[in-house]
Length: 399
Image (cartoon, rainbow, N blue to C red; front, side, top):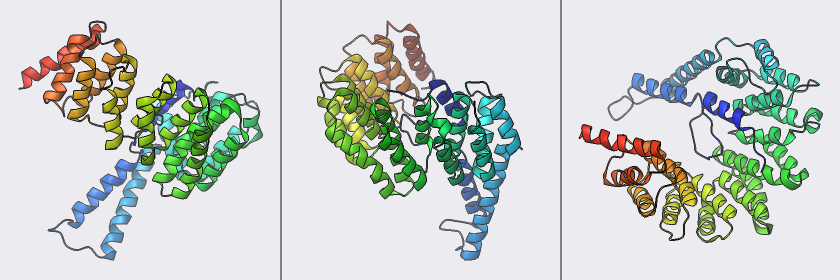
């Protein structure tokens, strides 16, 4: 499989708070502003049982205050960046697409692109310049995809459809940037479908995952028909796939789509598939379902299988931790799976990470039992074993 350059993804994750491939729903930058404004407006207007009833005039005033506050925060985020400075910084980036003060630039630039359609068109002009490196094209595509406004998406689709993209050896990773668009427009969905249809071989399989991600975005944005057009392609490939490579690719794409109706099918594959690549893809796809109880039950159930290998168990635990706080049953299943084996570094690491993430929230018997297994069974991973012992010791001093 071909994936987007990991280094740039990590930079985007650090700078923008986005993470796509694990399928977790995360707040978009700026949503905290709107939430804060709503709470502030409610406190001023006297909401709740004891508050006065609010009429249309007061509601409009609250909306105006909320919009003004959000705009104020957006301008603070942009920090005076202009369209001209945006273009200058992109052109000054190194050939890999890394700008000066990179993460801060990503944050400011995406704010500007969301608020200023002219800035989107200016970046499109830079993208179409002859001789621009693939790395700088990737930077522009990332900025437009994460900005995500209709104008940014229009510019991104125009850039991807331009001759300079078709002539670039890195065209596939550029098209895969569409997966980062959180609320895809009809034009973005059409462009992705058209690109998938005209592709072949490995490119076509890789673009399945982009279709899956866009389907999830369309569904969450209230466009179920648009999502269905994309997932119909995934279902077609699933029905006709014959080899491991095709099945692995389409199951990964179905995981990106995160349809609840797929949980039963994915659970069956994860539990009974003989091909390890296909099985692992199904486990990852279940992990991308988030906190849905059916998916978590399926993952916890896999840990009770007698023939499950340690590496597969680590994958299952990673999927469980992506669904939010571990339930007591999840931790008991982890303990049962790990208690009769020496923990290799991968398994010990996944258990330790999953448990450490909720150290402050969950310190009951199930949490303690699982962490005691980590501390006792991780001789091959001394750093992880020491961390487990330290966390257990810290509980004693607080009780």
